[in-house]
Image 1 (cartoon, rainbow, N blue to C red):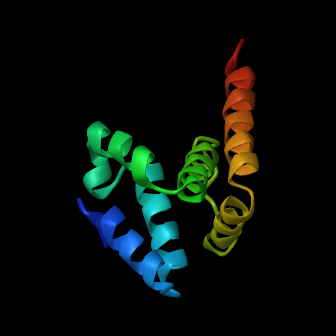
Image 2: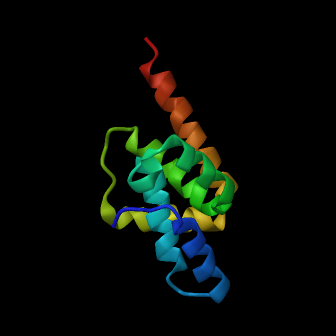
Length: 110
């Protein structure tokens, strides 16, 4: 399913209701944000999402992006771990993503 404008509001509605599906929606939004798919192909939509999505979703997206830049495809069975890590410790997840990007940049320096 492709993300669309308003998905963030739908996610918030589910969260306010305590809906059990919000975790799956968070993972889906993080993946769309990470790979710039759906309405997140527009840089303005990504910027707007960064302002409204919760820190765990943003951290999850950052980690997925950093992992994708390694060039090694993630095993689908490992992806839930990134979401759980982001929800438990969003700041640590964002720091891990930043560290991964820094180490990739250092590895590519001649």
